[in-house]
Image 1 (cartoon, rainbow, N blue to C red):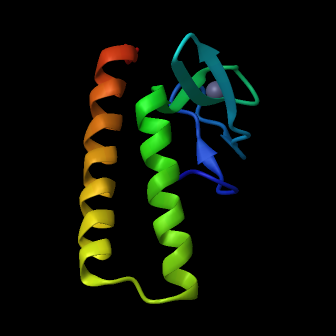
Image 2 (image 1 turned 60 degrees about the vertical axis):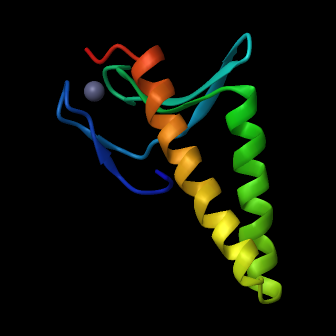
Length: 100
Ligand SMILES: [Zn+2]
């Protein structure tokens, strides 16, 4: 995910360091940042309650994996969960973001 990296605004062409913010709209949560110069909003991700829950679930697996070895079943489950999350995130993006 986008962090401390410089990014370039495709509207005004300026480089800036994104400062992600979140905004809630009912169950839907948007993570976005604005261009420092022209203010154009860039949406990083869109999540709903179920997706956020699954992301936390996956993060817990990733966390445990750092400390111990997960069983094959768990690894399989985690990999599937990650894929589901990515698919769902892409779906939500399509549903909620109208690219300019
Ligand atoms: Zn800009």
